[in-house]
Image (tube, rainbow, N blue to C red; front, side):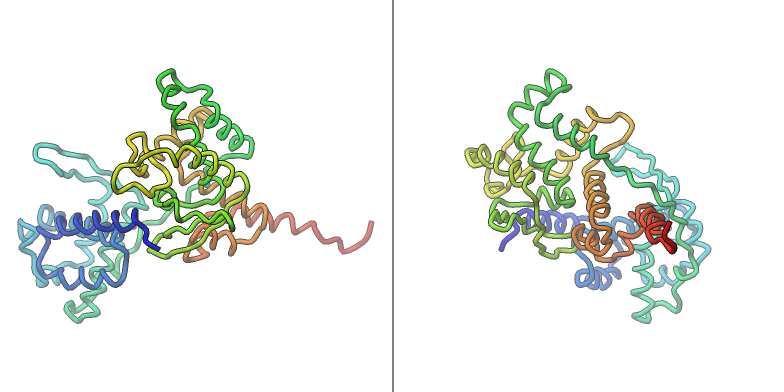
Length: 352
């Protein structure tokens, strides 16, 4: 089955990749070909962006490296040692960049951002070391920043109910927002109910086409992170919200390229990730002013509810699409600990 959104998205990313590669060192082409078979187009784009920052650092901040990044050769990479890499890690915490002429942007990276950027550099050096193009791999001498795990921000059950009520009624919206709400309330209710009721990623949600819904089995066919197709199932509340929205969706003539898209914008095009983030922010601000709720927080809410209902971390990992259950365990470790505490008094050794 064709996934129009994902094929179009991949085309856009590939074109962007080509633009990024234009002023990159020519010797990297072998590495880029290697990445084609290793990671998705979106991940490749992230790697290339981060590698471009690295070469920009070398040319601007380190002595005896080419001024223009496209002039770098493998010999320049051989001269990078652990001292340079440590200085680069320090640089990543704060630097200035100029994506457009005459415009300077301050960039801050905390532990997660630095670690992600280092992973691209590790991949680069590991590849050329394994190809015997480098005598050693200096990234093996560099430690990743210590990642400070954040507590899970999620909605409590009463907050979930209030959020859905707010989406359906529009109560509390500004006068201007209320006018749009009349046209979007069924769509917005279907989107938020789907996110809360399945735990899917926002990118997976906006990528759904109408033919990817199976009402006989109450399931969506979606493209997971990494390009894997998977069926995920939904309950009666999601089914009802979808059917209510489809009654109006079927009467909308979408613009070319978006004919099959399930969720449409006011411009009759497939709704985007950013638009969904904005609508979640708009409605959640009516429910809580303390928690910053995003589509990912709705995903965390689903994961929390599923784990509390089943205490099956492997089920949660599978439904959320985590390829490594340790990712799930890190997120829900506090709940696992709570369950173990309850187990301490579950068994009585002597009768009262």
